[in-house]
Image (cartoon, rainbow, N blue to C red; front, side):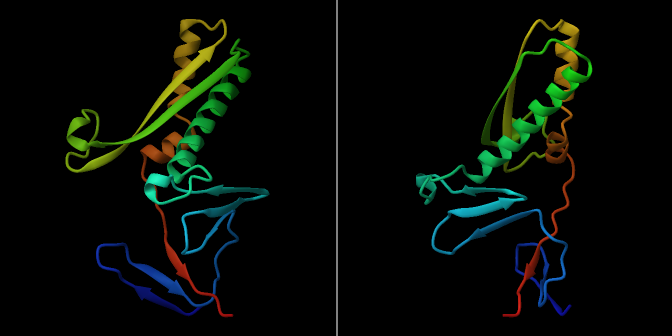
Length: 167
C-alpha cells in the first residue's frame, strides 16, 4: 500500500491510499458533485439521502440528520421492546418522537461545552399498555442506554481515509 499524508488547514490530517486495502464496508454511499442526492447501500438494503430545497437539495429523500434521528429512535424503540419482552411486561406500543436543533452552548445547563453552537436531539417516548410506574421507569432507563444513544453521548473515533483506486 502506497500512502501519502495530506494536511488541510483547519481539518484533521488524513492519509491518501493508492491502493485500497481496507476491510469490506457494510455501508457505501455514492454521489456526484452535481447535486446532494446520495445512493446508499447497507448490506442488502438500498436507500437515498438528500438535502431539503432550502439547503440546495431537491428534497427527494431524508437528510442526514433525519437518518441520525431515525437510527437513535429505532435503537431506542428496539431496546425498550426487547426489555419488555424479556421481562414479559404488558407493553403494547412504543412511539419515539425526535427533533434535531442547534442551540447556543451557553443556553444548555447540562452541557459541558460553554461556547459556540451545539446539536440537540429532543426525544419523547410514549409507552402504551398497562405498565406499572416501576416498569415505565425501568423502560425509560433502558431507552437512555441503547447502543446508538451511548455512541452519540460518548467518545466516537471516526477515522477518515482518502482512497484513490488505480484504474
